[in-house]
Image (cartoon, rainbow, N blue to C red; front, top):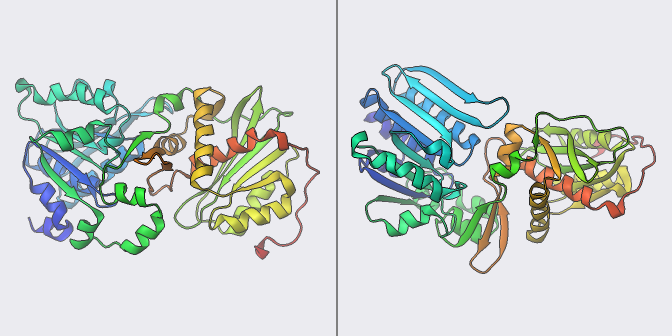
Length: 426
């Protein structure tokens, strides 16, 4: 098809045109896994009226992004979309997203858990399978449905970036000869036309283990989701509530500018439980405006401590905030050690149910995206994929808020604060 020649890179087209029943892709980050699997599913729906595809993604955000690509492909090949729906229960997790085509074919995206995976007789895509929360249980739930001879010949597509050896994706890649295997490192993708600056990308990663795993597709470590959905949901409340008038307040701020968000979170500590009471999401705001927002929040005399991301571009903002707000501001530089302490404390708060956060999809997905990686040498690092909505910036801000609240030995009641000077001086 001429259209595919114009849009797909050679390795992407090789995937789409491989008609094997069982197919597995070991692909680098940023090489178009969802783009390619969505293309194949849509083309199959076009050629087989009444076909059904089910997609299990690692999280809700990934599932919706996959469905967005499927809709784009449907438009590109002129396959008429009859309806698109996202079903959810109030503010809870999405229960299903569905594209219905005019020729009666359908694509469903459902949460990746064993309960929702049962009961479907469909062609299947397991997207980023290595980071599904319970891949072995999901596999046990879905495999019988696609191999039942009474259900007809169903196709199975498994794609992921590696996340160590201790998961079902690694087991399938190394031990199952029945699969047609496609491996694409970032070097392979670059050689076949992917417009990426390798030097800039590697410098931005600035970690040899992450580079080897995420971009060179090496199975070098053991990885896990830091915060599974069930741990998050146990601390969710319907909405943000105002802080009690006498409760001390604490603040965490993650700093971004062009690619990432800046997020300020305020929490009230009540009987040992930290309640998230305010969230300010600043997208592509000048640093002067970010500082102004932080200082306005810090002017509240109930605010005891403020932890500000002082890494890279955040250093100047954190320094100026400390100058204006005084010793309540603690600049925090993200290093492997400090991130370990911050995210360990974040996990403990959820485990102890000593945290209350709103049932918000963006916050939930940011929290769920954080991965705890243990290298072969025993080094622990934390990472999260970059998306159009940032780099799990809400999770970082919440970790900083918890850090501020747990450093209560340094609390003091501030004097009333007044702005001095011009914010444009920053």
